[in-house]
Length: 175
Image (tube, rainbow, N blue to C red; front, side, top):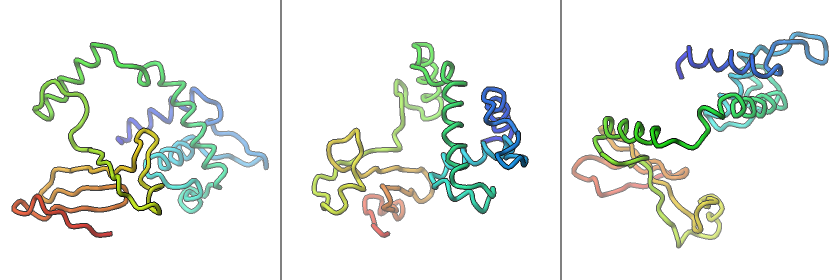
């Protein structure tokens, strides 16, 4: 994320919700700045790490970090919901079609070719919970392809690597 975009989000969130404004905490000491609160929330969203990870980096308790995430998500949904969290119009879809065609040279397509779910019907019972999603009836393995000299793929905590151009079809599995 660019610095200017991050600072715009911080200023918008601070202006929209007074919880993000700097003030005094329960001990009458200066509370966290809006920059620290938004950094904590975005870091949790981006990395998927638990709230207590901010202990060392921001010197923020788990509770405060969790509250930052909750208030940030609420505020972003309220502040930007009307503009960005709506169903796309036919004009938006036409723009998406064009942008996708310009970038990937595949006309008439929304979405991406880089992610596919494979149904794993013979998944061992002890692993079933790790590979289940609410929108699929069976456990799935997600294959994500990235175009690079070596095409690396990522599947729900499993790593696959395609070796080279000649061995493209042969997949080596390792943990």
